[in-house]
Length: 300
Image 1: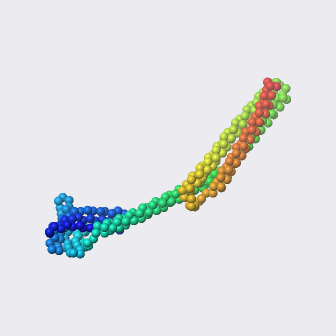
Image 2: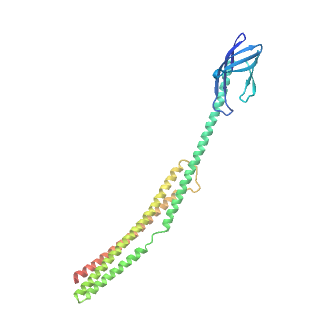
Image 3: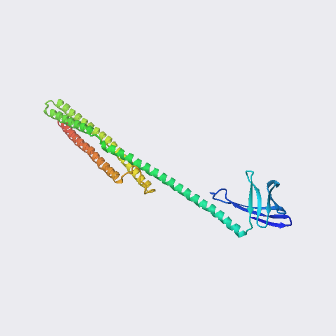
């Protein structure tokens, strides 16, 4: 919009403009510039002050129905701009159209950005859920492997068998003392029975050591089960962010809970079995000590 005041051949006025840098721009750039000029017949020259005291001149023609200006462009070309008489309201309405277009672009841009952010968030959630599901499957396999490889009780058996043999030795030496006529020899046999009792005690300590090893195996499996339980909880928490998404290896919570219950039952049974060996060898030791003490009491 150019507003012009004429006094004789002298012109003065203002140029108002609003523009978008491109069709998809989200902002507008307004400008308001004062100018002076001259009119010679139908020919006019408008002078726009620039920085550093420079003046930018635009030539054109003026008629009763239009103003045509020859406007230099940034690329050196000259563009012909024709202005028609109009009202301030008409200009303001046109400004509103331009601003509305920019606002529409901004809204569309925001919607696209929000859509992209939502897609990125969904993808991140999917990756997090998939990773959590994979962790459950990996830890689930570790627990299954542990259950499929129960502890061996062969050492318990061999050490308990040795304790029985050594108890038998103690009884045999005590019986030998009972049959010995020589008091000194009988006392020696009694102490040999006592030595056998100490060997049974050593067997008992060995079974205690076996129990420590068994406890380590049990604790290791229970730790794996605890890791699995935590992994399942983390997966379930991650899945709440995207309820409609199912990862390729979605864990079955019921299967996991069943597996954890198997760990509790199995490890409890293993621990009880190991404790049973300790109880048995403790009884053997008690008998061995009794035999030895009785032999020493009677013959020494």
